[in-house]
Length: 356
Picture: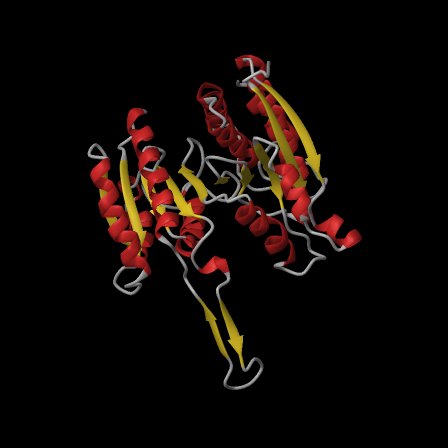
């Protein structure tokens, strides 16, 4: 009989410092696993810039089918200085998100103690929310085209595409997350962010679906912000937010704002979620190729991605132990920046593991 607490994890170390930070994340996961009776099997895949340079291949349909056999994918970073921008991002990351139907992009925005926040007079008690970004629709579907290309009369279109089921499943995930957070003692408030005063078709679809679904969640407080207003309030009053749900393009932008107010890319992690299939977890920062092999890159975002993966797998107690350990280590390092932490990459991984 299969062990329900044994997890098969695909690992894509990727480019630059990606393999280094994932190695520290695996170290922390295995330490938590030993404490809580969880076993992992990690299988490495070589998708990334070096493979593309050698073979001209990004990732094949068959290889994506192989990835479907795993409970989750643990990703380091994709991005190579010798490969033109867009090739790896479209050919690997977006292809994985769309083919595996990872329709939720989950981005916690949490300020840990000891981490400098760029917002005046804001501390960890003010910044603790989650952004749910719809991940497979909108402008990213590629609908549209170009006519008269290269002429003075060139026309280009890119269409924001959503159907009702795409909207509903994202909203349902968000309401359930708000309900879960309320059970954990958080506010349990869900804010829809859109631009209904301009996007009178797509925005209206999201808003009507949101208002209809809220009737099924009477215990969840709801709110609505235009995207431009949300950008202002996230800076002025981040404590107003608990769970935010946002269409794809707006979510892509606002989650980087979220990363900055929680201290920077060095602590920001994200999940590309298919609740019924294979999900993928990653640090948000890039591959940082100039630091490759120097053992000075910050691994905390990758460790946080591993924590998210554990919680998604149904191991909240083990995930909480990693969160507590990261919180402790954040009070000991000097900075989140590469080479300025006061410790090496592997030493920070060791410090987190030792606190579990």
